[in-house]
Image 1: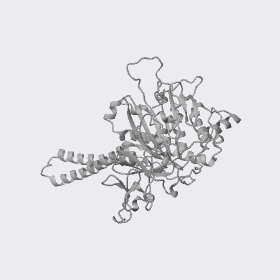
Image 2: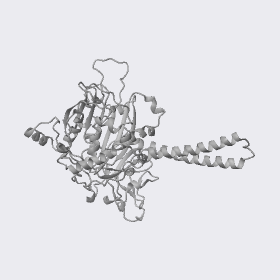
Image 3: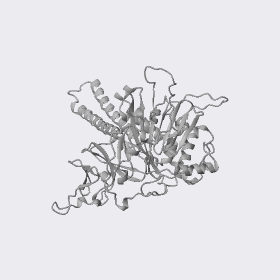
Image 4: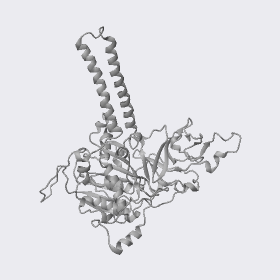
Length: 531
């Protein structure tokens, strides 16, 4: 049986074997370019002090020598032998290169028209190390560095050096003129890349694939994608997504109140509707773990990036239905960017309310989803620094996690400590200190962290700005018309009042639109005390 078929909520999920069983991808890994020069070789360095973990007392795990022996057998997690998501394809413009940072590694994604595939290169031209992400796609479909015009094909081979004489030696064929090309693949409409460019990894797709979510490719489902850069580290991001108990409090006023579950003996209730969250951790190993949620939904962590599941109850065995039961999935991909920085890519597939996507644009969904992320950004940014102050070895002593609602957090911290020594295996040299805490308007800004990366939000912002300017021009034009037409076309008091009202309405609409743009595309503070 294909273990990935167990992703469907009605079946009891089980941890996939090495992810070879994933569904076919839409492109394949290619032969890598000649190995990059020595300065580009990746070294695994210690992670920042923000990545902390220790075994918590409530976590299910062996004890004593048995645990140490099991750890020795399972070995350490190899961060470089994994696939990493870059962005949803719907947010990548095929006419321009896109720079991203993953594991401290700066890469550029661009669309190779020659083979209709996305490519991922080192984001540094071999000439003078200028960023290729600031380049362009030339008229022959090659990636061009805009510093001196060097051009590269999809394999990373240099095809043209404008400064080299046509009848001179073919210096562009030298291996030093090549740029490292990483294996890449589009799966579930998301571009993934493998952070090793050596020739021995050219056939990586035959050995392992990114985690596959069949619901995303199911034609009866629709999926809303999004991406956001966040000012806190990878481990804090994963931990937060695995914590359902914070939702009614940190996101108060943004999400509907949860139904109060029966809790025998409870005499005190709060307005947020919080309560016990029962979850059981199963199948925990170096590949991740499964969490069964209160006999209803489930969530699975596939290390290092993918966290997915559904809060809806599974279909009972033997239950006959004419059509598929309502299903809604939460899929999060957590990307380690650099110390103190991470990126979340989300995909929410569902088979209910499918028609809504035909009338509601994607940017409208992002308004609410960004507000939810904003509401705990500052909390998590400061929490990460408190963890760092406590020390990497003191997570268990610094926190108090006595209830089952923290079981997924504990399971992740145990995985992170046991298999990674509480460290991210950075692919490039990184500074081991957390960035300073900026002001809230910079910490929670939306434009560069989301809007600039989202084609839907960028288009909406452009249209709204144009409308704002049009309204302002209209208000001035109406006032000018009133001044010119006074005593001729506009003769009565009622007519003048109507024209003045129109001018005021246009101006007020432009001011409201300016405020809407600022709050939803740039910055809006979230004050928990007044929610």
